[in-house]
Length: 211
Image 1 (cartoon, rainbow, N blue to C red):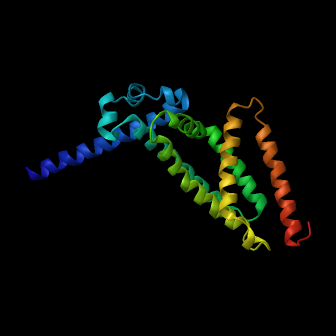
Image 2 (cartoon, one colour; image 1 turned 180 degrees about the vertical axis):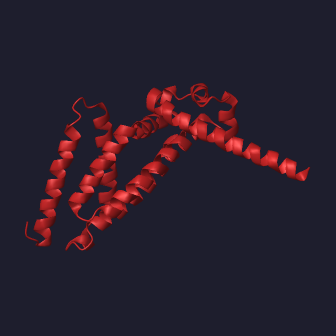
Image 3 (cartoon, helix red, strand yellow; image 1 turned 180 degrees about the horizontal axis):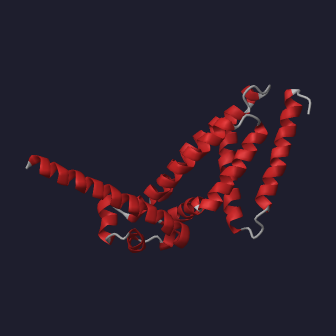
């Protein structure tokens, strides 16, 4: 009897985990397609083929479920971008990596999830602080990227890495948001191409290397 009961317990836990995963995935899709205002408990439950009450049973509130959706998107993005950071060596490589980040986010719709959370967070007390806290990991990631990009540079010790990283995160977010509504799909890639060329030239000039 004890073994049978344990099996039912494991089955219930497994079923609960599957339901939570479906709700998170449905919340991501709802944010992408319906926006923050349209990501209601009813809409998310419908997409997840779940009961509306399960949103509150597993997550406590709709904002907490939406934060879990943002965490899911962020975790997948971080895994992908760690590989880009590992492969980059020169400053121009990091500009190229930023372009790949923007292209991937736009193609997947992940930028829409973040954009909706940033814009909608103001309407829910305490949510803006929760979203901002989740951007800390991206600033730390950007700091690692900037530190690697300037490693060995004659002025590396004097560069404000944390400030540069903050500007990088803000710039990428801004470019992604603009690209998502810009009717010209080539504008951002062309801008990044010019930035990459400028970064390569600046690195060559300040490091004393021949172009």
